[in-house]
Length: 121
Length: 107
Image: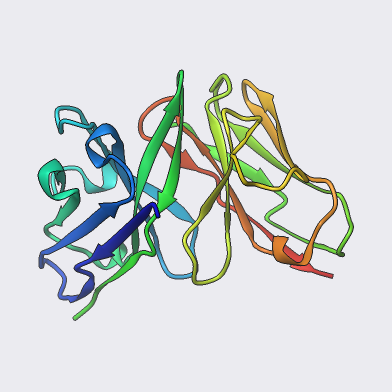
């Protein structure tokens, strides 16, 4: 079964740090671009970051540049999101997903169940 | 960044109804668009990619169309399990951007 499982969420104070993990199984993780998407409580989806199979190409949404770092360990089938200088506006459920592609088209499938990050004093 | 809009933001429909959701991009994105369904407390699920290609395993009552700036998700005959929020996503250029979502409610 293809599966992604996130972990590492929790309550953190403003200005603090947190590291999210996403463990993949059931597919060849090292062959896939990966992504992080977040969803603030009661709000819509926001794309956060993408990373290429070898980690050599990375993209971020502007609001997290310089604060968040996406990385991966293909030997451990794991994706990470290091989040520093956290703000209240970063409070959200964070999802990881595999990026599929066909030609130019890309889409996110499957998704993990999400992990909640709450930034509050 | 490319702005994505969706209309309507919410709609009420009955089982068996035909439902159409629109998604518009602020610039030409060719057909680099996917559609996702999300139910409360659950992760999103892919429905359609490349604007009109149905993901394997997704019921054929779902269809997508459009290219350039205007796209449509159609549910031909709404089923009870289709009540959810639907999002479009452009992958034409970074940063990828989602539409704000369309909530489909029971009438």
